[in-house]
Image 1: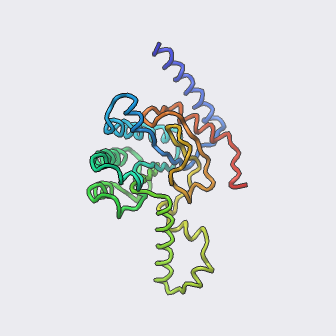
Image 2: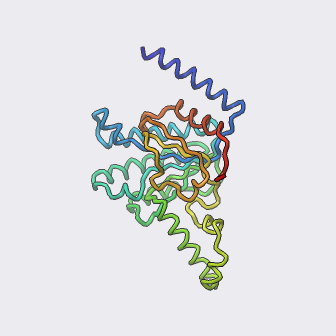
Image 3: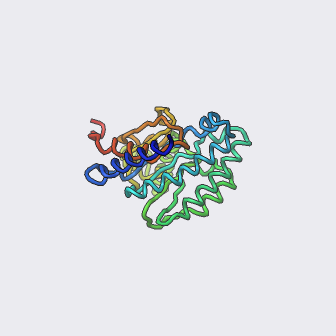
Length: 253
């Protein structure tokens, strides 16, 4: 039974891809919340580490799918600020898996890696390995890796950075307040200089942002998939992109 089912999926994928090639606009920037690794592991009687490793392998596969349709920027939510409060054993496993993952991403042809998050709270060994592979050079696809990330903290840090910069320039508080704008805050976000995400995908059936790109996602389109992240398929990705392309974006209207 497995072969006919796989054949049907391949045929369906080809049809979806043809639709994208013909007329459906492709998102320039895709954000993804890779949720469900632990629940996937529990269902299959595997360890938490196995779940996270399966999720990491899926990320590399996912980036290949993005490259196929010319997505320019991908932001991966792989380690939240809250994740760092898990047990020391799990955090240690996550550090090793994420370090290996980011090194694999950086080794992909035409891919540049940028870290987004509060690096001051990231364990030193993880931070060192991640910073070693980051690049500011132009590349075919930019991959933002969100580690130690919290959406509220990002906004707080952006405002602090803005205030410090303006104060260093000799501006008084009243002038800073009177001139403050969303564009100015945007210039101090982790993703400064990048377009906001057009599409945000979340796996595992959960329908919330969990603090992911709170500022940048104001006008993003959202797609929620029932599959746990390790089970997320190319078909699911193409469906998400097709769904995005068929929507009429209103940008808050």
